[in-house]
Length: 509
Image 1: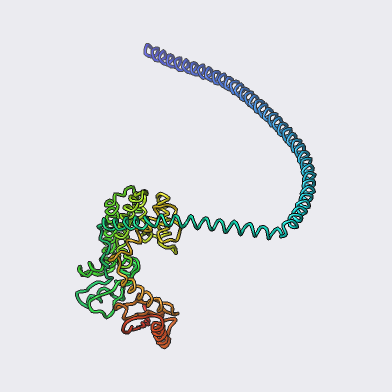
Image 2 (image 1 turned 180 degrees about the vertical axis):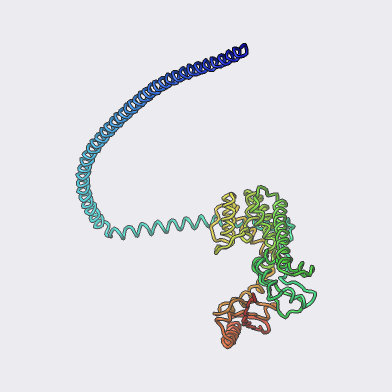
């Protein structure tokens, strides 16, 4: 019985515990639900309040923007009204000025009419007076003018001739002697070699087999060398030699040195040719700069830019009448400086003008202008003194000298060119004869190129095979030979050779 009581008591306790916990859970759930409802109401109220605040802020912002826009509109209307008033004021001013101008124009018209009337009256009076004077003098107005002018001319001519004769008689006594002494003393003080070696544009070969290697397969080697250097390489039947033809002495020198080194090296192919030409070009460029700087240093002329130095250095490879142009320019500078110091001119300007007078021959430009014009443009562009520019421009008399230094440069240039031993006229005649030969050949239609070789004893001509047939080539040869006989003078005889070549190239792929 006791155990049953204990069991029932335990069961009742457990049941009461579960019931209590259930009641507590239900009470807790009810409390949470109430709290959730309260929070929901509070969130809704807060959201509504926030929405009302946002709405109020938006309304305020809209009102402010509206006020701002209205204020800006009022300001613009005010500005437009001011502008309108200004325009109206300007129109009124213009109308007032126009009225004033009309009044002035009317007054001027009246005055012009009055002056015209006055002028006509004066002309009538003048004509009457002239007529009376002609009657009194017994000659017309034109006759009187002619007599007066003739008397004035005779008197002026007589006085001028007396004055000129007096000046000539006074200056002849001293001018010739002073000028001769200055020039002779300048020449005697000069110690410069001016005649440079004229290098022939030919390259000696160890054997005739080397010609084939220079030409290369299908002519690729010689074409590469001609393209890179800008020269014409002539390979003919001259034993163990090739000829380089180019009017640019720098390019001719680069081609000559590069070809000589290729022949010595023995490896001749396009890549090696390009490498050698680039190397020689750099070496020649250094020589150009070194020679230009050396001459400027020897003369004590400073402040020369790199472009002027390069143009001077290029003259090292130029010759004129067998005279090296750089040495000639140096000599002219020395002579000009000596003469300028003797006559009281600016010796520095004279020396600078003398050194740069032939700079156009070394300028790296192409054009139709002569070397004096190109040189003047170069030194002017590089900021030289206007007297130096004029000396360069006027040293051949194309432009009038504007200062004494320009005249001194002309004199020094003439002395350098004319003194014995300075030039070799035979070389110029020889070059001119070759140019004339090539010019006659190139004047014929269908001729692509012409080369005077064998010292002018042979004229080799390349014709266009699409324009000239074999029979026409024969006629061209006869025509060229006939013109040479009629127009040129030469010793012996000249061989005219025409080459007409058909070349067909195909590639197997």
